Image 1 (tube, rainbow over the protein chains, first blue to last red):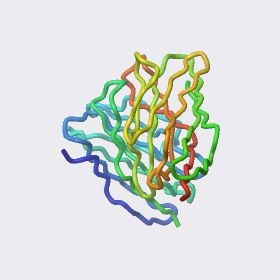
Image 2: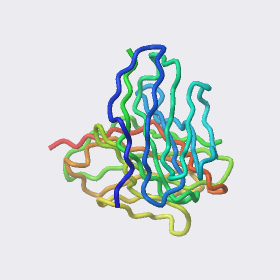
Image 3: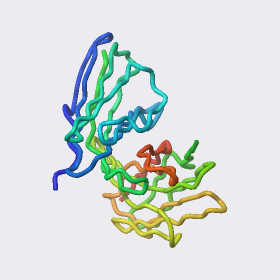
Length: 113
Length: 115
């Protein structure tokens, strides 16, 4: 069974630009959660999508948005990039129940110059 | 709301020695508990989880953890570490009353195993 796939693996953008990251979950998984990982703030929850609906949202500004498609693939978008958005963005997929294991992708490393 | 405190940011240890990585949590609701490992340039891999039942949980790669409800702790242990265990370890909690996929993570503990 294929794991969680995130594309691209690396991305370099400049301030003010926007970026879209993609996450393909494990087949059959309906929940996709996104996390931002930085040395200063650690792992922080961005949002979770379940069956195309946002089910949970973390404390990030509106510049961070996401969506989920009918095949459970998810995208997150960051508009008007800031230097502080440089981070490893991880997505995790699960069947959707609270005790279900979250399987993480390798992440997309975003550098904002 | 939940919070997780990993009491040691770095733990150096010699190969074949035992190790304990400490994790305390705070929550107003009951939680599920998890330990993950992250190797450089990779995502997180689940080591073990506590949902209910026996408070001693065994995971992959010889790791185990004990849930202590009164002390709100979930410490990770391994009786004998290998060089390949060098990595960053994260403790996480999730609300057990909902189906939410939101996990709250600690700041991580860097385990360095020396020969």
